[in-house]
Image (cartoon, rainbow, N blue to C red; front, side, top):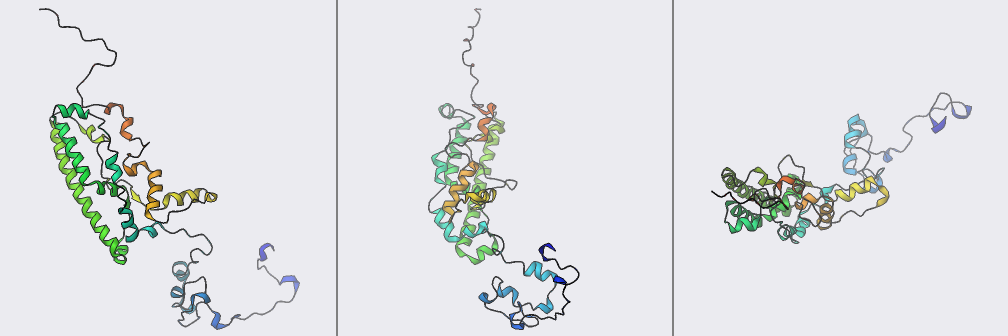
Length: 298
């Protein structure tokens, strides 16, 4: 039958034959039938000697084949390195030396919801909020950048890499300090809102950066952009990044929110909300409106 299925009868109509196992030498068994035997990797390729050797065939169960000894990775199907491979202490420190967060300060926008110069001349509480925030952002710029380039670092990774442990601990402290400063500023904003200088729309102003919350999916998996592109179009053969510096470039290109919409050409979502434009300025006559009539003579 097609495919050589073992149907009834004997192939070619000949007489049946008797076969008795084993049909191969005992020393060629992978793993050994009854004893623990760790072979050289070349002898039992592609199996992992440390996984296969300690489990003789005699004590195997079904789960041994499904859980302990699945077909080795990269043997039948291509294996794509998990994103974690680029997350090492050396790679992280090399990236941080480039100070990628500096672009946030270089491209801070002017406020959308109020005229900064107008409020500065009037020395309003809203202007003081803007000044206080500018100092806060400068002090915590690394934390703001890290918050949208958050590398997944597990306890096992920190145990294996002391540099990664140091970075992970420092990052946590930076995030806590930034959060504390922001909460204090929010308290000042409440006072400003109660005094009717602004309302909660102030928080939507692109002038202010925000730290993502738990509901936001902001983890950065280095190399995931090119990896996804290659999976979607296998013939593209887009080179995957070899370090975090090249991985950063592709992720920032793909996700404008990574740099808080401060990259050239990025459009902050709040700019698509018409009511926010100069909302907290004094009312003015609409363009082209006739001047107000003078008061009537007494």
